[in-house]
Image 1 (cartoon, rainbow, N blue to C red):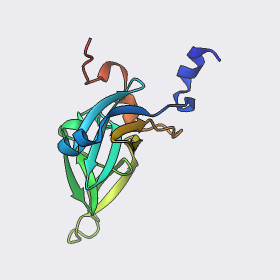
Image 2 (image 1 turned 60 degrees about the vertical axis):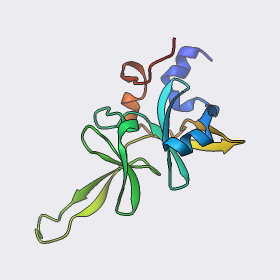
Image 3 (image 1 turned 90 degrees about the vertical axis):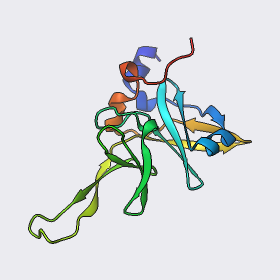
Image 4 (image 1 turned 90 degrees about the horizontal axis):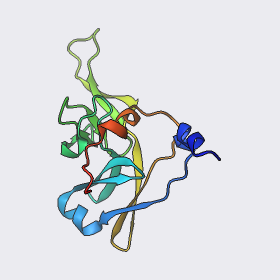
Length: 157
């Protein structure tokens, strides 16, 4: 297969798990950043679970690794520090509050915009954290900011 062909269909690539750090370090800090197969990700440790997603917010490329984790409607979300967009850690859904315009006295309820942020798989083996990039074939809004000129992690060279 021609390497240029593989680049045209990134969802068809087979990605291997990449060791991004030690379990003890992420448990202490609650988050870490890494480059996995040239894609920048942020890994969160929250309430005993690991979550990984693209580092840049799907909305405007905000740095999610600098955001705060808050619960909305019982779902832990990362809140983008730029525009306060809320993204569920487990699924990558964008959440927003809605009010029924026909009933102004109704209480606002949390609604989903659908999956906006690409989520990746985290595994732990012998005290090390591994991230495997998503192979989901759908286009995700966060894909636009995931590589290239929008990178935020500085290389050590």
